[in-house]
Amino acid sequence: MEKFKFDQKPVMKLLLDPDYVPIVLANRKFCNAVKSTINPELVKIAIVRSKGQIATKSTYVFNESNNQLEANYLYIERLIKTLIWLKGGYKIIFGGPEELGKKLNAAYQTNGEREFDADFMSKIYEQPFTVEVVAIKDVPESNEQSRPIGRHLDGYRIGFDAGGSDRKVSAVVNGKAIFSEEIVWYPKLQSDPTYHYDGIMDSIKRAAAKMPRVDAIGVSSAGIFIDKRIAAASLFLIVPQDKFDSEVRDMYFKIQKEMGNIPIEVINDGDVTALAGAMSLNSNNILGIAMGTSQAAGYVDGLGNITGWLNELAFVPVDYNKNSLIDEWSLDYGCGVKYFSQDSVIKLAKNAKIKLAEKLSPADKLKVVQALLEAKDPRAEDIFDTIGCYLGYSIAYYAEFYDIKHVLVLGRVTSKSGGNRILRVANQILKIEFNDLFHKIELTLPDELNRRVGQSIAAASLPKL
Image (cartoon, rainbow, N blue to C red; front, side):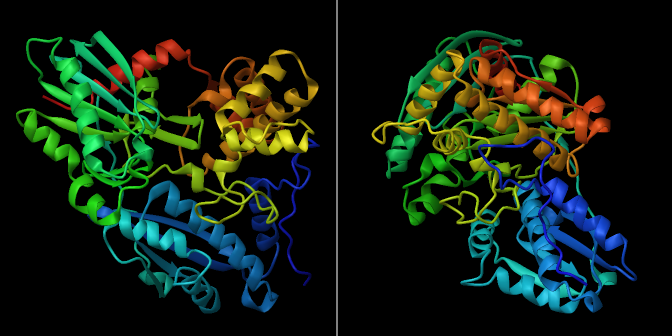
């Protein structure tokens, strides 16, 4: 049998990224090829995270007699990486062909190709990261529970949003923002967590001064939070690990105590964005995707609950092209951050022969390309159409893990006319390649002003009195 190739190209010819291989198409080709063989082998994967929650996925790979170990490994390795960053976890339980299990185990060891993922998850969950290879019958079934959060509008509340360049706060009385303020700060450049604590408390106290009392505080922040504890956040990028462990992890418990032990909730800003969309649309099953410095995401399920998943789509693979741009942090290829952020625009601008001054910041490079788009430069139009193509195929991939009715697309990459071009092409891809999803999923570009106000109210609504 010939060696299987992950080479399924998109229906839309991408002149700026001709080697792009959408993961959803290549996986579909792989699965169809496996089904056409005799005795395909069952694989069962369980990812274990906090509080004993388990996400389990079953699939099939080529029987070992087909001599397709490399194709099997690539397919399963990309699937596991997706599950780890989408749902989170510190343990992989693998049931399937023994040689495939050994190869996966090696990838997550020291000096293995997925060492970054193992180290990151170990720090988040404060558990050693392990891979267990077991008999299929010993792989546990899924055990996941979402929890209701937010939509509480009663009383005097504070909604706080900790961003990488500014901190926003609102005083919210019975669901209406009576005061909102944005203050520029530089958390990623500060190694002393006192700077962060003082900045957060300053914003909270400014909002508190506008109300006769404070009943609850809701926090929306970039980062990963486990039971209100800060597991990882770029806001504390250069804080030494010992100070992070001693002063950062439990920072919001300290803030809660200083504010009189009132209810406080701390949620990833992507989930709060999805919650704000759910409240605005009066609907559920909402996936929010923000394209800015990186790719952020959040999700509200069919019950209107948050799932406790990581939703770190920046690290989820969307492209099988091994020569694609490498993510500098994880050192992996094909990850969402290079397709749905300002990095994507800059990458594609180079391919489009748009010269951008090296001295410009990434944000300013994005502005140059956006200005060309407003001037109807066809090179800039190709850039945003290409990102729209990426988005259409990636939504189809995400839909294999999320039950989606609405996708909210936001972030500075979608500002001005770029956002409309991205959504138009994404819808075209869904209509042509995934017609059932085209009729099920609505793509929405929220109004920026309403989104900001809605975000603060959604954040304030997080705690239950």
